[in-house]
Length: 285
Image (cartoon, rainbow, N blue to C red; front, side, top):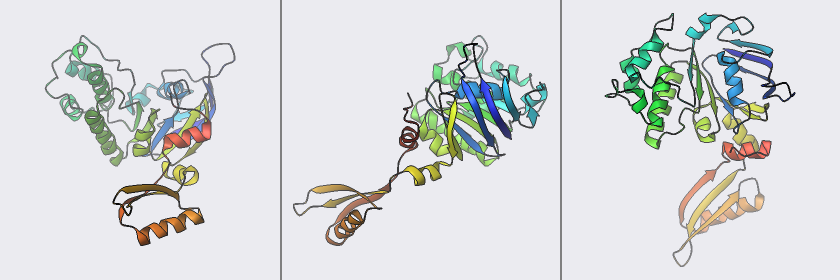
């Protein structure tokens, strides 16, 4: 669905590259996470793939269209939800969706259905300018689904949302995944990436450091730990974290299980954020 070869992009003539020789592929139906801190090159890459930025160097194919040739038909196949909600403030929520629906040469979804999907039912006739930041974000998210996109670009889809609404948005994304929609997700939120993505790419300073599945990354880089809570002789609770790859720790764990009343015991794995820092030496701020 997406093929990127040796993509580079610069915003000036000073030789500095916002994206430097980036290559990756996204298969049909895959959710691909593009993860990195602010300024890493995530938005620049998305800008090129969605046609907002001109392809300067490299070979890029999106939804079957070579970006070296401008073809407006490809916009019928893609949907885009930006981190900054760019909606028309003087139009109502319903008018916003109807306006954008008229721009497509393809079937579109019922705006009422989409507004209900993102929790804006009952606010159809309110001007977008009266909406909170989170409501505008949901409206822009709904707009990205208007044309039944085969390829869906999501930029920080849960940013600025309270946990309940964020859960709704993640549920919508999962439902679209189940339908076979291909998704390109840019974020610095490793938790949503871990939950939603089939594969992730770590990008720092315009360069991709690695591409793999969250599961493989945790198995390869994460520490294999077991955290156990048990009762001491005086009835208080003790907690220990033991390494399953260490012979001494394994014997210690076996001894605790044989001789103590276990309160809780569960395995622990490294988070994607911990692995990102380990690999790149950078945080996500």
